[in-house]
Amino acid sequence: MFDWIQYIADWLVYQLLHLNKEQHIAKALNFFIYDSVKILILLFVVIFFMGIVNSYFPIDKVKNYLSRKKLYGLEYLMASLFGVVTPFCSCSSVPLFIGFVRGGIPLGVTFSFLITSPLVNEVAIGLFIGLFGLKTTIIYVISGILLGTISGSILQKLNLERFLTPWVQQVLANAQKDQDLFQAEKQSLKQRLPVIWSEVLKIVKGIVPYVLIGIAIGGWMHGYVPEGFFEKYMDKSNLFAVPIATLLAVPMYANASGILPVVQVLVAKGIPLGTAIAFMMGVVGLSLPEAMLLKKVMTLKLIAIFFSVVTICIIISGYLFNMLL
Image 1 (tube, one colour):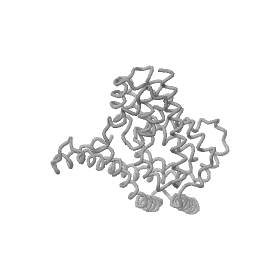
Image 2 (cartoon, one colour):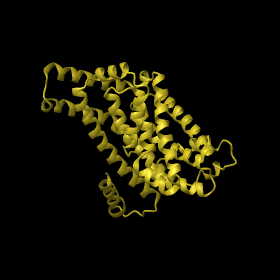
Image 3 (tube, one colour):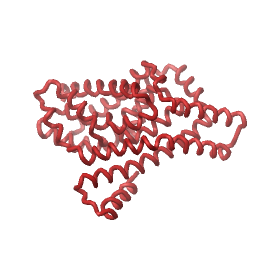
Image 4 (cartoon, helix red, strand yellow):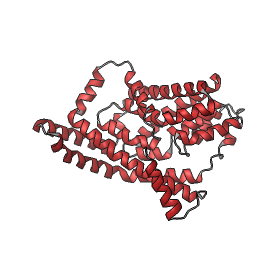
């Protein structure tokens, strides 16, 4: 989908600047250009689309419907399944997360999407089958979906909306005000578009600094953190290898398809598959760049709670994988 952006990034770094592909600075800069353009495009598209949707489906009605209807946890499962069909890394999922929050989707349901989206997608599934076989892939996909579903359900029960930042509260208030205007004046879509676009620009302008800082951190990690640095801490004789692997993964940053070859190398070196997959989930689902992007919409306390719940679930998954495989 975004191959043309990669082409531009490659041209700028390797042809225009004449940097060598093996240089750390080249890898970091290429990553920064690619992810910056991709995420900014996603921000514009998602927030604009959600703005149109929100203008016809008021936030309060969406919240009330989801609060009244007893879906018995299916809403979290559906959000996780939607995450499976969106092939985004953790940072790329943040624009959709913001759009969902702005659209009145409960926070726990939105978290289910945010957790599953980077972990499980069709590209990662295809690679997983090739590297580890069908049985392991099925267990991984199911565990990824369950991880998002269970984590989202737990986070929803904690009533964390109060920990959203004032910026998000203001965005929600503006969205509600715009909706009231649209409904009162029964405006056509053409009449609504200037107001919607103005709000899109305001939201993107507010979050761009966080996006660029987060991606810059991710680019530095991508270029300078050696992939084999943590292997010695994941030895199969270490009872605490799974939690150590999960926590040590946080400083790294990659998407699922990018980290899978590393997982294959770890397994080939004798590291248990469950430990290697916990490391992969930590790299993909818990990263400092993602935390930096989320800082605009969540307080530090909410980010800490979110990361803690997901970390615990990943560690449990890692131990279960080691027992099952």
